[in-house]
Image (tube, rainbow, N blue to C red; front, side, top):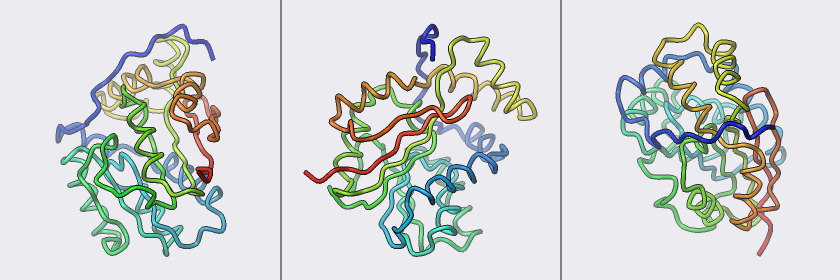
Length: 226
């Protein structure tokens, strides 16, 4: 992918109630279902696990994961109080409170002991993070040897006009606030090449990176034994 468009960082935390509510109201059903299906494929054979969701937002994804993997215990982390309030409501509505634990925490500094997670997953946290080295360091710290890591995130387009086209194509029916948020998120995203460099620096070069749609890239793999 062309790197003609330089990254323009956006705020790490979506803590305004209006923003969180607009995000929760948006129709991410197809995207979230695709994420969970890919996680289910990657986690084949891991019927039981302690899993960590980073940047859980309104918790739609861990609720879906809990249905797909009912024997997993899932810790869902977000630094936004407003998002976790919505997530709490979602877990209660889905009768998933016994399976999903919500944590208010920064993904770059987790209150979780080292080498305790069998699975670490995240949908769309990476583009919020500027000091990505701290995020990858925490993922490496909390994951057990042999743990599965799966992140899906936005991929930065080659130009601002490409970003506008993606917004129009995939969020044209959403609210003006959400379309603006989506545009800013695309400009704040990383390229495949940038993430490969991040992983090399973090000692996580065993993980793979691939652009999988016109706007998404995946990072996945297994943490090797020390």
